[in-house]
Structures are given as C-alpha cells and as structure tokens.
Image (cartoon, rainbow over all chains, first blue to last red; front, top):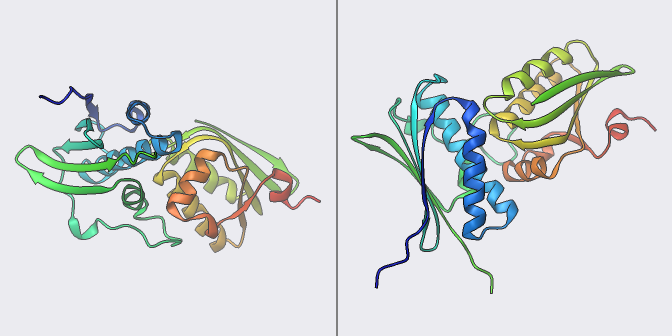
Length: 141
Length: 109
C-alpha cells in the first residue's frame, strides 16, 4: 500500500532579508502541524532563517537579486528542509560553529542550526549549492 | 521594528519593538553604537522583541565589546521569552549583564 501523501511546501525566495519573516511564519506553522511544541516550532523557524541568512550573506554577498529555492517536506518521522542557491559555493573551511560562551559574534548561525536540527549538510550539485537539514519528531507516550 | 531612545539621568534607555533579523539588525546596531557615544550607560529593553536571530545577537555582542573598549556600560533588561530562548541556544547569557527591570538595570534603588 502506498504511503499517504505528505505536505510539501516550496518557496522561491529572493535573497532579500525582508522576506525572511514570511518564511519563518510558514515554517513555524508547518512544524506546529507536524506536531512540535511551540518553542520547538520557533527554534526550527530560527534554524531555517539562519540557513537563509547564511545564503544571503555568504553565497550572494548581501545582493538582493539572487534566488533561493526552499523546500520543506513532512517526512515519515519529522521534517526535511532543502535550500538551493546559485551564488558562490560555501567555503567549507569557514563553516564552523562558535565556541560555547564565546564573546565574538561570528559563527552563531551555524551554532544555532547545529543545536536545533538533527542533521545538516552542504552539497554542491549541477543546479547550485544545496543545504539539507532534517529533524525527527520525538513522540512522547 | 521600532526603536526609540530616552534619557534617564546619566543613562539612556533604548526600546526595541518587533523582530530583529538580518534586515533590521543594522538599524539597531547604528542606534546602539550612536547612543553609546552620548551616554555613560546604555540599557536595552528586550521585552517587546518577538524574534531575534544570530545577526541580532551578533549586534549585541559587538555593542558590548565596543562599550568595554569605550569604558562604558551596556546592559540588557526585560528579556522576552523569544529572546531568552535564543540566548539559551547561543549560550550568550553569561557574557551580558542582564536584569529583570529597568530600575535594576539602571541601578535605581
């Protein structure tokens, strides 16, 4: 028997920070429908916001005319996020999470993504740079 | 996001209302750095912030570092639940002076 259809939302987001609030709202609502509690929904929306921010800053260097393809999929056990951009590829040597309690401002976004999501990775593909992240919903009984 | 600044004695209180992200944090940064130049102590009210991301936290860290360089005080008060959650995620609570109320932040008995 085939699996039931699951929700999948796709955004084409300009690399302009004024659209970040739109994505946050949609991702937070999707996480809520899947079953996360309110604080987790806010954390997941924050992690996606941080991934988009990284693309705007590092792939498009704050240009607002780039395009980011965002896909959010309900999976069998949680949520999968995919971002695709055609900006500069990330410099893997510079992708690092900050040290805990550090008083320097850099690396916070990656630290947040690592804290919130269960898995994340960066891939280069013929279509562009792809960021993929997932989080499992841990059901309490 | 709305920002306002008012004087309370020798100090200045900065009020922020709204969401702080990559698009809005530069305005907050400009206001805080400019206010720091005109007051011995700057207290930032974070009670009406509904959302803050890493660019907002990075702004606060930069202003704190600048205040220490200028030998001035930069303190935070009234953290909203949304701000507290992000502070917890980023482990930055210990690097700031954080107070519950404006009175406490300004050291008013």
